[in-house]
Length: 524
Image 1: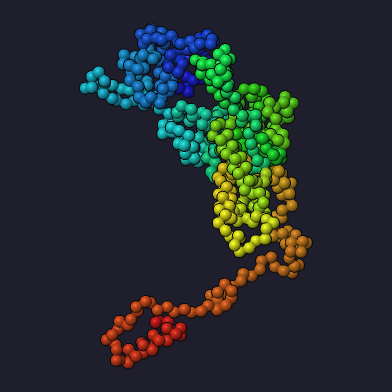
Image 2: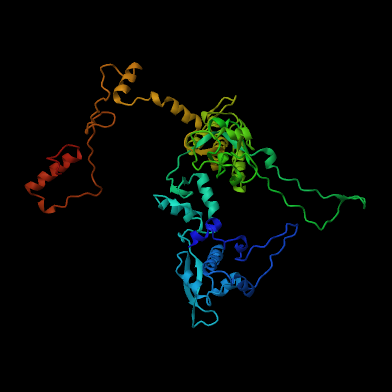
């Protein structure tokens, strides 16, 4: 099977040597000389490949075909002629290999008309993952959420091209829970459910030197002709602007009391881990002790050995390091949030309101952005002029209030000004852990503490009797007034009772009812 073959030479499978490793086209890898110009790989025909694989056993041929189909799983079912041109294995002639593939659960076989002879049917082959309906990040997350008991990561690694990057991104962002399985050295992925995110104190921003675009070379005047306005033409186009990688963010509040290295946080809509790298390179190049944990929250710091070796990115009172670079979308969101704060700051000049300190302050808050925007729009403006009836509610002030409310309701201001993280910040968690022993366990202990703090009298009961609400009084305790309404164009329909004793009784009851008096037992 595939799992046995991928164990390579660990168990003595000497046919899986380096010369049998295929490249992305299903061909054998060739040594490429490093040079400034790309060296094209030598093209081999199907007959040449067939001569090379003729000595291979059927099990190894099956592995080569499966490896080729996995590399091209996005192409769908492939005909035997295409497989032969790329691998040199003829599935029409080699019936034993074709029989093995048709009974392999990793291969999907479909019968289609032969292009050369439509009256005949030929078998086409395609790689089939365990979860073949998983095709992008959305369906990947949906599949993990359906597996309440967890799903091994190896069952999802072959779903589609780029699935490994998406799995790493889901674990980094905390969209799924990942646990190491020590028995088979694999990760088990579980659905997280609804996340609890909080804002961190401090306004985040990109360092100034990182936001400056590279200066384009200015055209030089032609001094030889003596005409400064004439520009020397050049056939070479101007160099393209080089994108700067931003790994460290600026903050105006110390983040070390709010988050640890290795924990997850979000900036500009992109998720990161606080950088714990001790050497240059990717995250997989770091030692195990310097790799971020699978969980998004840690209860302890990383080993002290990392501090002795030295982190390559500093975590101090003014900087927050990331384990990856900001993408263009995240940098754009942070930049727009900065512009929204600057625009709001200009409009807030002269206004006196506590809402301004929440909107423009560095500390996080849990207020509703729409409510703050409405309050900011109606905030008073300090002025030395005496207010009068003509200038208090003029159209200019109404327009200023509308502009202020519009600026305060900018979504970039509330979404991307602060960093976000999972769970409460580190200082709040430490405060809870330090004081949780003082929380009363039972009602007796709670009553004793309330009596000591004079919140309850010694002989008073813990629970007061519930107030009985009367049905015939309103919220102010006043008796309700019975109201009688007469329908429009209402008339008596029992015309056959006119002139009788019963008709007279009904008319008197109707008059009393119009006056608000009770009639009989309520049947009227």
